[in-house]
View 1 (cartoon, one colour):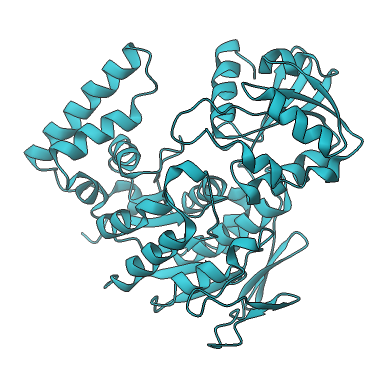
View 2 (cartoon, rainbow, N blue to C red):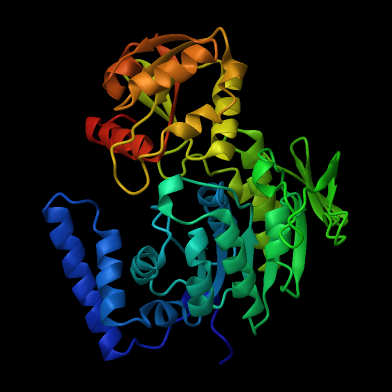
Length: 424
């Protein structure tokens, strides 16, 4: 009778232990939601993995899987890639952004019989997720420092990625950023690499050769180590204005998500989709329909203010966020929250951000650290008003388009508040 098409593929039944673990996870998730302690996805997956550590491998078994990992851009790239891969067949995708093993278990269980999977993966979980899912392709965009109190720095992460790829013993294509020296060093063990000129706007973290511990030389796009000879690889793909150009093909990119870095992200998604067999023009057409990534970029109407949320979590994303917000001409709101949980105490990253580019503009500073944010904006030459509550800060802006730039906890809190207000 032949092989059934992907849309009709059925997977072998899960072992009893796994089914029981997943059922317990669902109960834990419901209890978490009922107690008002979040959406329950993380706790549900955590419980399932405690009861059956093999759950992720068994849920991924039989699927064609792609992973996306990076310090910046992985959510948007995964969303674009999932849209492109869906042209091949039903695709599982952790669209809520839960990108550690527990969240991936929940995402794959929810979409049990989908033959393709695109999984945004936290940088520090790439090893166990790769071993469990045995992906066909991995897109690695960049590595840089993140929140200081996470306890994971880009140097150990680079070693983790390198060890992960050295352990691969199945056919795997890595789509890697030729412009990032840290990524280049990390992917050296990979046998099949497609190099993309992916941009490296924040280059300070990749200034030192990881082998020789000497400063890299840079000249235009090139970088190299004078001691060991490590150098930028010649990319097969690059972004030329709004066109992805590769070997013998040019693919126009018409994206709904804003910013030059998101166009770079789209090139990674396009190339990764092609490694799975997606036609590049069909991939670009599918990616054009992505305008909302876990609450980012899409406009919401808040009493006549067309609000767009932009996440800024580390120096690299602060740079891109400022470019997007500044180029838009929107009214500006900067939302900084640092309340003491594991990834939000560090408010110093705003001082790495090139806010001077916005000198002379009006802005509203808001959030638990509104005073810190206001001081940074004033030093940068902006005209600043402080409003503690973020929704009131939006309403203090003139009617029309408003860009709200916030760190991770600020972004999540405001996104959920706007959901509760019914802002669409």
